[in-house]
Image (tube, rainbow, N blue to C red; front, side, top):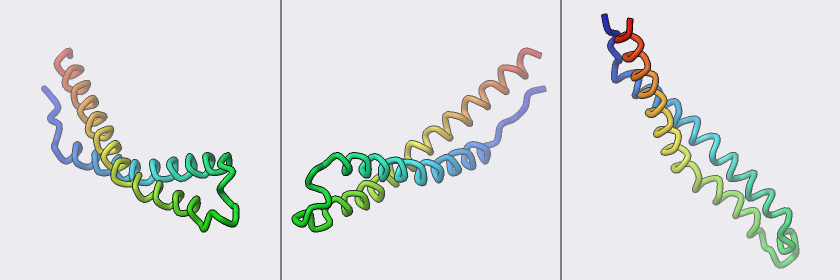
Amino acid sequence: MSRRVSIASFVVSGLLWAVLGAIILPILAFLFVLIVNQFDPRCGTPGDSGGCEMGLLVAAVVAVLPGAGIGLLLGLLRAWWRARRAMVSSARG
């Protein structure tokens, strides 16, 4: 008796991981740019005019879509791997 895997599990897994990726990658991008700005001698000077701070915002906003795409891919791969393992284990015994 084989266990059937529904498409809904793939969709839900993909969407949940996409949301996680859309949240986590911008946070990581923000922190990376924040650390890099600490070592830039031009940041915080009177001639900066807020350019370094705008770089923080842009990095975080631009990272949302790639984060969602990476999360979607990871979620779908994870669901596929689990379904494959379930089918293999049900075929064995």
